[in-house]
Length: 154
Image 1 (tube, rainbow, N blue to C red):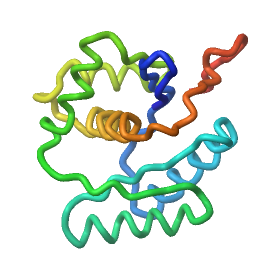
Image 2: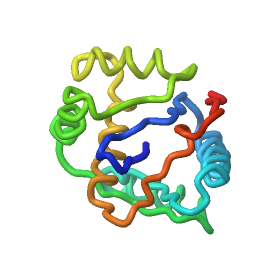
Image 3: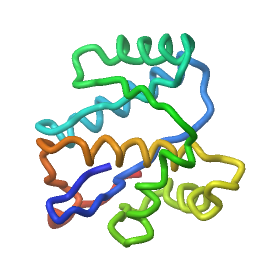
């Protein structure tokens, strides 16, 4: 997700799936490396750290996997539905956009069913990204998808 100069937000892509812990870490690393090439000057990885020792250990493992990258753990508290309210308000206000790709149908289906759908992780992740971006005043808000000739590869 990117925060734009005009105070709008763009979701450029979403990767989702069910993997083993090792496969998940490999997927995270591969996509972080790819995204870093696209956004070399203003890229931060935020890992959600769920409550409890298991959440802490998982976040620490991912941070070790991403050694050398600008990565932080975000310790979340409270219900997903409550944490998502500011993001949902921005969606309803028309300030959140997305770059269409293979991922967008599943993302929009989950969003339309929120919070009563079977899945809630994509909206939870988007609301976490939004929350992080609005508290990052020094974030470089340029976004290459608005450059002429941009094509989303996903």
